[in-house]
Image (cartoon, rainbow, N blue to C red):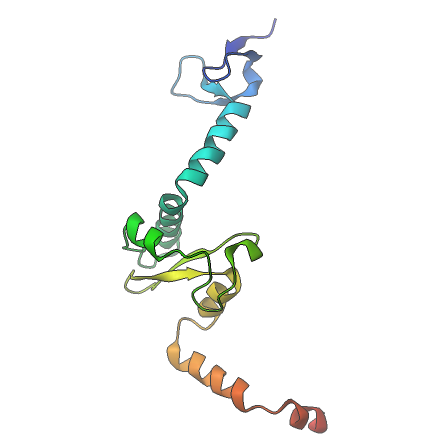
Length: 150
């Protein structure tokens, strides 16, 4: 006979394999079924997107050994306008939305970036001089000259 438990959210009695494990509880499983737990998580993530973004940024910084973002949740929320602060792309144009950007040396919050701009800064090592050289290179290179040489 399979053990069952009632979900504290939907009230349905379900087999224990329909609940996440929770070793802190006598039953060994969560009080919410997997379906209800997943729905609650989606709602929380939507309602707390800025808190989550800050948490994820700090967590990643700690794992990678650089300074975590030191902004408050309200500061990052107030800076959010739904567009990349570099290229102006709308958040909806990107699968992963916008990323919280901060200086990896000081932790200072800089703004919200799309994946491409965020990765671009990272690939340039956040080195302003190198980025300026790349900008000058793009401005002055004549594609026709390259084609003639090739």
